[in-house]
Structures are given as C-alpha cells and as structure tokens.
Length: 449
Ligand code: UMA
Ligand code: ADP
Image (tube, rainbow, N blue to C red; front, side):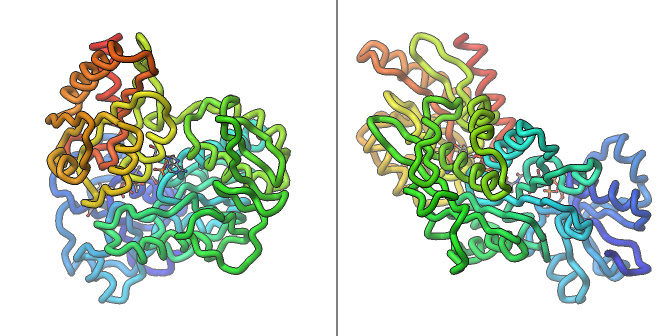
C-alpha cells in the first residue's frame, strides 16, 4: 500500500519500471519515473502511455529525492548507487515491484531462485502445471515482469527471482519456494559470497514450504523437515527426488524407485535431471499427479540459449549455451557431453579463479577457443596441454572451432561437439546473452549449413 500524498518515484525506465507505471495507472497512484541514463531513447509507445511530464532522465538530484516518500527501484540498480544511499539516509521507503506484487496477496505463488537453473526449473514447472490442466504462468526475472501476472486469473503464479530482485525486496510471501543451487555469481554487485547467499535465502523467509536442495552445502538447512527435497544423491524418503547412475545411464528416482531415464527426455546433462527433480518436488508437494507430470517432462524442449543443439552436420554438433555466464554452468555443460569437445569461452569475466574449470578441461581433454575482452585472462588462468586458440570475437571463434573439428574428423570417429558456453557475461560485445547466442547461431548457419 502506498500511503503518501507525494507521487511515488519509480527508478528505472526498463521493463520493470514500465510495468510499475502501468500498475499505478490502473490503481490510480500518482508517480514519477527517473532513469539515470541521460541519453535514453524512449519509444513513442511509452511516451504516449506515460507522458514526458512524468519522466526525468539523467542524474537524480537531492531536490528530486525530497519530492517523494516512496521509491520503487528496478533490479538493475545496485544498493551501492549513490542516489540509493541518499534515499536511505533521508529515511525514505524503498521497495521493489516484487513487494507490490506481494501486497496483492495472490494465492498459490511459487518462487524460484538459484545461481543456475532458475529459468529451466521455472519453465518446466509452468509446462508441467499447464499439461496437468492447471492455469499457471511464469514471471519475474524470466522476462515478464511480476506485476504483469496480475492481469490474468491464475491457479498458480510462478516467480523466477534473481538476487538483484531479492536484494531490495522487503517481503515476498509464497506457498512454496526453492533455491536450485548456490555458487558464487554477481559478486561485483553483492560484494561477498556470504552476502549473496544471504540475499538468495530471503526467498525462504515468508514461504509456507521450503523445497530444499539436499546436496548443496551453500543452502542452509533450517532444521525444518526435509520432505519434498531434491538433490543429486539418493533421496531420504518417498516424497523426495534424486539421481542414480547405473550402467552408463542417469535416472531420476523418487524414494527408492527409478521413475525417469535420461534417454527419455530432450534435455541434455545431469544438471537438467537435477532441475527435473526440483520441479517434481514442487509438483509432489502440491499433491499433483507425478506420473502425468513425468509424461509432460518427456516433451519439454530445451530453452533457447541453454544447451541448445541447433545444428548437426558430418558428426559435428553445434550447441548454443550462451546463457552460461559463470564457470559453474559451463562445468555442468561440458559434463553433459560425451566425445570430443571444442569449447568456446569468453566475454566479460566475473572472476580470476578458473581452477575447477581448468581441472575438467584437462580431465576431458577439451579443446579451447578463447574470445572477447577476457581472452588473455582465460589464457593465463586455464593451463592445459591441449590446443588453445586465442581470437578476438565470436566470428573468428566459430571459424577456428570448425578448423579444429575438421582436424578431429580426420583423426577419429568420435562425435564432435562445438559448444559455446562462455562462462562469462556478454557485456563486452553484446547487450545480452540472447544477442550473443543469436549471433553465434546465425554465423554457424550462414557458414556451415
Ligand atoms: N538504470 C538506471 N540506473 C542504473 C541502472 C539502471 O537508471 O544505475 C535504468 C536503466 O537505464 C534502464 C532501467 O534502469 O532504463 C533498466 O532496469 P533494469 O536493469 O532493472 O532492467 P529491466 O528492463 O527492468 O529488467 C529487469 C531485469 N534486469 C536486470 O535484473 C538487470 C530482467 O532480468 C527481468 O527479466 C525484468 O526486470 C523483468 O522482471 C534480466 C537479467 O539480466 C533478464 N537478469 C539477471 C540475470 O538473469 O542474471 C539478474
Ligand atoms: P538461470 O536462469 O539461473 O541463469 P538457466 O536455466 O537459464 O539458469 O541456465 C543457465 C545456464 O546454467 C545454462 O547454460 C545451463 O547449462 C546451466 N544450468 C542449468 N541448470 C543448471 C543446474 N541445475 N546446475 C548447474 N548448471 C545449470
């Protein structure tokens, strides 16, 4: 509830800011939008909707801060930003769109966070629930702002929440919540791993049920029961899910029973079996039909830019995993593949510590192509006797990867995977990981179809 005679300030004129403006228009709340980018080009559609009088671009002055009591802040804006510090020291109220969503008291809210696998679990859950005839929709970090979910009557509201969104959120109440896993990420913004872990755990605070990942030491076990848990080990009870490896194949198990084999699904890799376990743990908690859920999982396709096998010719398989923006997701990606692997890494680095990745590169004899802003840093930090080629950009990476593939084709008959799983953000050369992934795919299709 916004209780103030002054207009509410919305900070950020991106997807979130626009969704808040729409929500306020509907609820007749007066507002003013700020965006610190002076050169932001605002589309005609947005100008018509909001009007120039309600928008201020450029640095936010102290006078403007005094014009408001309440500030609704977009996730891209860090707590460290100097105007956030000023707003805080002026004792003003700071909230997020997720707080506004919470105040609507929607029933059956399911919240997902984690370092890797958020989007896959969120979309899997949406897919399973819809296949079971339940009206469910996913929003939040996945791209559709949370407030847009309010436009439809839903049986289940699924929220993918990032650490950016959770950081400034005061309260999100839900029926069940889940942290897929926690490994260091976004530490440039959150400063320490401890703080990042704390922010991720905020998702559990007002959740009726916490669905726990038993195998992840970074997820606090609160002492509450661990029924409806998931993990990569054997489950402790019949309402929990895990993974078992037998005779060359991985299986999803419920209690002691094998319920799904990796060769029955379209998703690649053991990490995706973990994502399936996470989704099934929620479905089981909701008391829904697990057998029907398993059937729907079998026709769930990979999500674009996540282990997306988009081209195959002469035993060379091209895979776009551009969403892999940290080294842990790249480790999962290479673990998912058999045969020869040519790995394209690069972009804007988030760390100097590539020890775990270096180990797996050597263990699996992976050929490396290093591109982008951190190509030299990767070259220095990943030591290997295998071939390592340093290039400037994705186009050159594709050309070099294909040369290595041709060399391998002459040498042995094993399957060859050329994998873009960069372990770094895309911001050195692209606006998003999607743009990077699309560029990669179009270059490959243009040259090697
Ligand atoms: N802005 C400022 N000052 C700043 C920073 C940003 O004014 O210091 C302005 C920008 O100029 C821009 C606006 O804020 O106009 C953008 O806001 P935003 O960066 O919060 O982005 P939105 O368009 O609102 O999108 C956000 C999420 N973006 C981020 O968290 C960076 C989207 O997640 C999310 O899909 C969307 O809300 C809907 O909920 C994207 C993302 O990259 C996909 N997420 C990160 C990730 O997945 O790793 C966390
Ligand atoms: P997020 O939304 O958390 O970024 P995604 O589902 O989009 O997660 O997957 C991002 C990347 O992480 C993909 O490249 C994928 O290969 C990898 N990944 C997905 N699920 C997991 C998991 N459970 N554990 C480790 N890595 C994963």
